[in-house]
Structures are given as structure tokens and as C-alpha cells.
Length: 472
Image 1 (cartoon, one colour):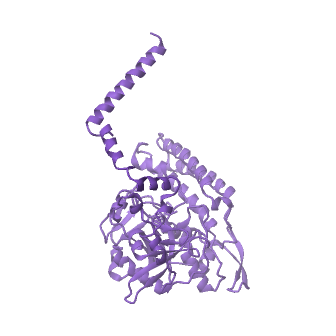
Image 2 (tube, rainbow, N blue to C red):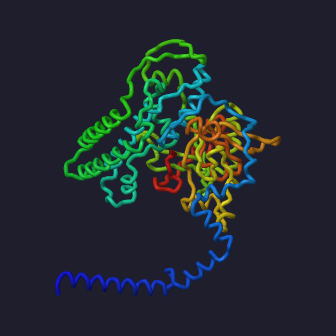
Image 3 (cartoon, rainbow, N blue to C red):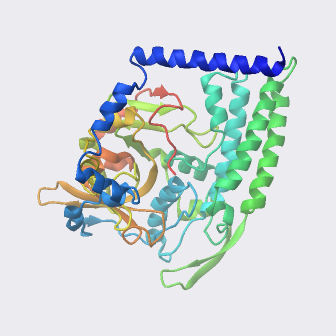
């Protein structure tokens, strides 16, 4: 028998075997049987309304068709308490919301304290350069630290899947600023690759994976020393530095800057290092900032920490105190009443009317449209990966009724002035409770009993935990 006929016979045998296996699976109840298919078909298409709805929906977005007309009048932009914002920023096509949000909190304070023009900004490009360099070092050092683990170990696999990203959270803002300082936006302006991060991030990730394999191999060699590994890692980081400098520009070690007042008049021209500029204009004690979170999948009043969720190897992991919403809201209200914005993150895409900039549980009636229910609560959505924190913004306003109960909230976004409502997003209090996850508060707005809980030894969670997601 020729090879051709052997292959044909083998293929026929496999096909027959597959058919038998499929029949057994159907008989066992695991597959879709003919009877099941007939039953499913009976549930659709028999009525004129089903046919009419199908004819409409095949050419339209379900979101557009589910728009709740009865909810259209609920939107209003009045707020009883609001921190006056200076200028809306725009992260463009990048995942730097966490950086824009953290720096916007500082920017508002700096403008007010030093009487700077309303459009003053810190350079996001400057800090992002060092963010990407530090994350590269974090990955490469983790390759050295974990070289004894097999490559199919879950931790090693996670590292190779996530060598670098442009997302992050507030701890990264704090660690990077404390280490590298700040510069004004006009000293190191945005480039195409800081506004559009995917291409260069993909190239750096590819190089890091290659370097990670090499470091793991070197670390396992007989006689290899820590000094040799560090020297090789430094050489690899030099390549990453060059890639960043070519696409983003090289960060200044020193610069001359014209300080202007609120009217745009020059006050003085001075030479600074990035750290001197930070110390003069925005010095902040980040140890007095605390992240609280509403994660209903875990025990409340406990402190949790996420492995590898940091931007700087020698910095701090993301750490938070888990609290119920009824404890979080009063602290946010106290901060807003004292004219202090907050770092805030949520699941921004849920029930968002992007044209109005309005987030409301009743914006879209998918249940009536689809003839079914979507009944999971917040805990169930987090557990099943249906919801999680996806975007950071600056919490700046709350509307309270006569009894002091919040009706709605507002955040300053970083999607530009033409996005949402004048660059902001407004959310009902019901939406806030369901899809808000993290907020960073200054110590003075946290009650003493809650502040004392921050001293607990944290429960360490793995990097692949459902609630781990860098804001973008």
C-alpha cells in the first residue's frame, strides 16, 4: 500500500472515530444534540415581533438600539460641591490614564499654590520615559530572581505574558516622581510615540522577552555571579534606553524655564534639575496618601497587596484597604468639600453614554431588547471577570441632597475637552456604587479608626488576581 493510500485510510479512520466519539458525547448529554437544537429553535422566530426585531438588529449596534429614551431627561450638570478644575488633558491613544490622573491631582494644587496659568501641565512624556525604563528593569530583574523556577511555572508564565505595559496605578506615579522629579510639559513635550504607545511598547516587549530568556539561561550557568548578571542586565537596559530616547526624546538633566503668572506674564526665568523643580513647585509627601478599594470578593477591613504591581523594582507594590462603599463615600465627600481632587478608578465602559458623558445603570435597556435578564451583582461580576477597574480619572465633584446623601458624582477625564461633558464624566450614585473600585485619599480625610487599619500586615495576592488590572 502506498503512502498516499495509507494516509487516506488513516484519515477515514480518524473521521469515523471522531463521529463515534461525537455520538457518544451527545448521548452522554455534553454536546448539542439534534433534539436540543430543535428545542432552541422553537424559542425564536415564530412571532412577527421576533422577525421585525431581527430585521432591525442585524444592521445596528445593540447598544444604540438599547438606548433608554425614558432616561434621557435624567442628565444634569449641577453639583453642590465641586473642585474647580483648570484644564482638561488628553492622553491620546495611550494607556497613561493613571499618570495623567495622578499628575492632574498635583497639577491642580500647584496651579493654585503658585498662581500659574490655567493651562500649565507637567510633562507626561518625561515621566513615561522613566516608567518604561523602570518597568523593563522590573521584568529583567524578575527573570533573574525566578530563574530556578521552570518556564511553565505560573509566575514565570505571567511575567513573559506581561513584560511591560503603558498602564499603571497611583503607586507608580508616587515612586516615579520621588525618584526622578518632574518637568513642565514645554520642557519635554509629547511625541508621536508617547501619544501612540502601542508600536514602541510592542517592540520593547519583544526585546525584553528575548533578553529574559538569555538572563534565565545565564543565571543557571555554573560559576555565574550576581555581578556578571547585573552587568548583562545593565547592557540590555542600555538598548531599551536607546529605543526610548529615539522615539520619545532624551529626558533633560537640567533645563531653563520661564515661570508665568495666571495672566501669562513672565515672573522669572530659572534653571532647574527635574528634582529641584519638583521640590519647589509640587513637593508631596506621598506616604500620607492611601488607596482604598471596594472589592466585594474579599473580606472588608483588610489590607491587600498585589505582587509585581509596581513600576519601580525598589518601589512599593500597589497596596489597598478593602472597604464597603458606605465607608468610602464619606471620605470622598470630605475631600471634595475641602477642594481636593482624588485619584479615582472604575469600570468606565459600563452603561456609558459617551456623547453626553453620563454613566447611569438605566442608560441602556438590554433586557427588554434581548428578552432576558443580566442579573449578576458586583461580587459575581468581579469573580467571573465581567467587571474590574479599567480606567483612572480625577474625582472632582459630588451633588448632595438636603440630607447630605450623594445623588451623583463627576470626574475630570483625560480624553480631551471634546469628550463627554466638557471633558468630564458624570455618574449617578447607583453607578458609583456598582462600578467604582479605587480611590486614593490624603490622610487628613480618613477617620482615625480606618487609618489605623492601614498598619495591618497585607495579604499578598498574585499578579494574576482578577482584581489586578493596570488602569489605561
